[in-house]
Length: 475
Ligand code: GLN
Image (cartoon, rainbow, N blue to C red; front, side, top):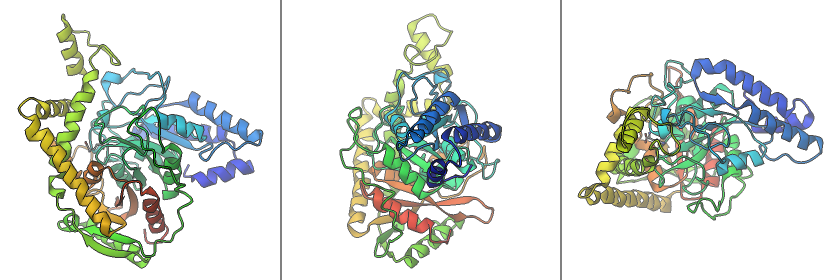
């Protein structure tokens, strides 16, 4: 079901289909495809049909059912849904049912969207391949032998396979952009604070974002428009007004100044590099001015990110102790045994690795040397971007050094997996909006995404550029 949001709107209005028919079709399609990809952890038929019926009733009364009316949407299983399981891809939360909805969930439903299911992901969103899920990996619908990327691999796969029209993911260091690139769709990480984190299970709170996936720039922009904006339930959510991102998709990007960070392109002699270079040529042809910029602290980004995110994760994951939220180990005599066994049996290897690393960098004696140092480096990285945005309106970069890799290929080497995040974590550390837009495929047919990064709250410009690129006829 590769319908766009606009087509759904037209189809509902003309009576070509009802929201209930659309939801039933999406659910059946998802059920049939899932054995191939394992992209959904669970479908949500009751909630979907109730939402669809509400849309149909509004249409029957002649009311406007909202900008996302009847649109089948899937949600990464780290975002809380009332009365529906939210597992975070973890054995520990296999049976956890949240007592409330995340703000983003309430907002998409208010806009008329129909939630069809919860999607598979790396455990607590830690990973780049979706292989860290306790419920098995997701397979990339483009090539079932390959990973869909991670950690929001399920949310990318369902849009790529057409079982949902759009989806929500979360991005801490690239988990929306990288799977979007691997699956050949659009994925957006908004400015930090643009979308409320209320109801998003915390991994690294100063880096966590909720953002949309879509089959087109328009669809992703429409979802962000619905979920963005101040939320009194999240003190870090921004007051900045939300413009209409879809109305800004004019196709005109003449005179826009594009920056190419020299540090990113130095070692990128690959098919990915060639495709990005071709994408830059397209932007030039569309009337953009291209300049070289410098982000001199890029080489420190990976260690900086993995100190900060593990520190925050070790603190955030302390709450899963067998007393609250989680299932409890049956083994152990004492309270301490119960904590140890619950966490020892419940967390997968990657979460344990990060809890240990994070605890270490926060411990007395190391806190200044690692954690405080990393925070300082983070400021320098953010400053690199502010300086670059004095000269240009947008930065173009790769999303990943390579396209989707084979399942199992990098599983035994966490360092290799961490290094693959180089192009996405810099934007995350700076808190700026960034997105992946498809820019062609390798000779083997594997999709490659081009990353667009803009200054804080400049999502409208980012979408305008991505949309003009998408419609250039070159990709
Ligand atoms: N791959 C990165 C990590 O493992 C990013 C994860 C994310 O953005 N949630 O930390």
